[in-house]
Amino acid sequence: TTSPADIEVLEQISVTSQPASKNVCQGASASFEVLATGQVSGWQWQKNGVDIAGALSANYSISAVTIADTGLYRCVLTGPCGQVFSEAAELRVDLMPVISSQPAATIEICEGNQMVLHTAAQGTNLSYQWYFNGNPVADNVNISGSTAPWLTVNGITQADEGIYLCRVDNSCAAAITTGTQVWVNSPVTIADQPDNTSACIGDDISLAVVAAGDGFFPW
Image (cartoon, rainbow, N blue to C red; front, top):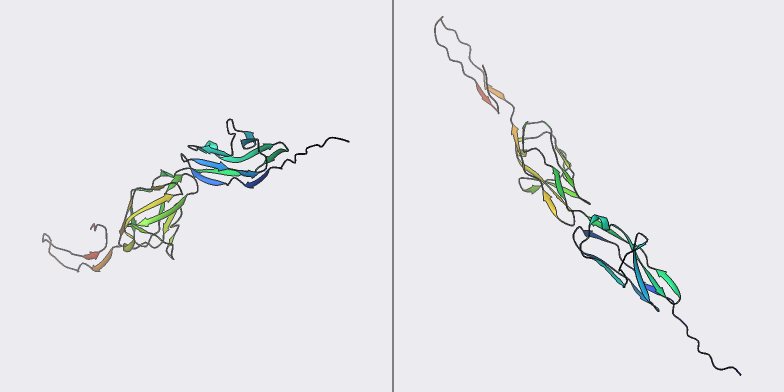
């Protein structure tokens, strides 16, 4: 008869919690974790399919991410029955907004005309909001682009005179443009025409006109 033989059944590795994709602001920390059952003897994290030196545990952390850390991260788990790959998690790095083009400091425009303001910013996942005298601007029949880099006001009136600025933000921070002072000039209207008059040669005469609006009145 043969002697009894011990048979050890080795448990296959099974990943029970996958690393999660995430958006992280530049300079912040980021970490990934993988959980598994079975006999795990080793872990190796990879970025874009390439081993990361020293990343040999169930957790992998980056203390201060940069744009160069953007990519896909996964863990290779090793056991006596072979290797198992976790799902890949995407790390997306958001850059803080920076105003790269300021709108004009001052705009003088005639009532009834179209006014356009523009700003530009660098960063990722940016959102825009224009403000007028400290209050958020909303699109309406005369206004478009209140949440875009270009703000357009059609048929501008005296009520639109004031200070405009734009707030640009993302999940990391906000940047605000310098204020644009907008002056709206009213059209000149004549309320009282000069009167006809007659005078002798050498006499002084006086003519008068009554007008309203912004401007000057050369004779």
